[in-house]
Image (cartoon, rainbow, N blue to C red):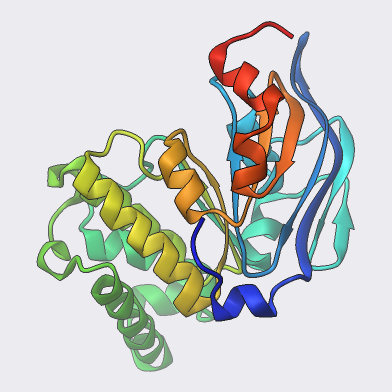
Length: 266
């Protein structure tokens, strides 16, 4: 597990809590009465075997799925359902298991798209790009260039993302999420499909986002070495049920977790 940072020491306040959430699709129960919280400033991992309900849980948190039971409290506001626009405006951003970028647009323009919610001028002003709208665009482009520098992707800023290798596409997607200046960043398998060097780079950026920006992070990841190195706490799902919750050391020694990953029937 990583060493505590300044943000860890200041943390402790619950930023988001999931309470008794259940989600079904027809007769399939994806999530069953799951509760856990995410504390401000931490890196919180959500792990489990394939089909455990991990991505469904992220989709509930940011409003893509609406649970049949339970509630979510984010920054002190409790809802039975979180709407996607409310999640985004409230400070929740995410990346996806499969890269979801505008493939014909450059890396810079994809990251710029993440600033949309921050823009105050109307659509017509943005088309004309004059006066206040032009000044606003310059301000937002400056912020995007800072993110490009932070992620060390200056060399590919004008390259269409369809031409980029997978690892760099993942980094651009992270940049777009950071452009929203989120308080809670949801990362769905940020290192899937990456080689060792790409994983090391992404791990470094995740730590830096948490340490330097103070961004709270919840991530799904199958690489247990990465999970143990990056996470402050880990919640484990199996067939939609929470089977463990604690520090990385506590979780990796939990017999239910060991059984789930070894495929032992419950």
